[in-house]
Image (tube, rainbow, N blue to C red; front, side, top):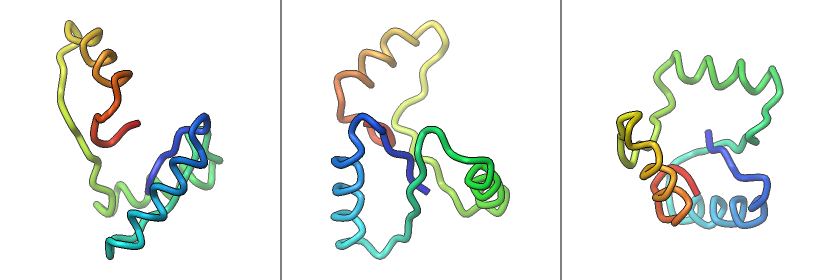
Length: 80
């Protein structure tokens, strides 16, 4: 499953499509405001161990400002 930013929807979808063309991995799109059915599907996939989250870095709560700076600067894996 893949979340996409609704403010960057076209970029997210095109980028995902291009990555899918060169990678054998399967993915499904979902918005940041998914329906109850989508939440259920994500829950089932997570419980089955089918979803592997991409974690770029782990920050303590005291480092939340730095985490947001990195996120806003771009290039963070797993999030735009």
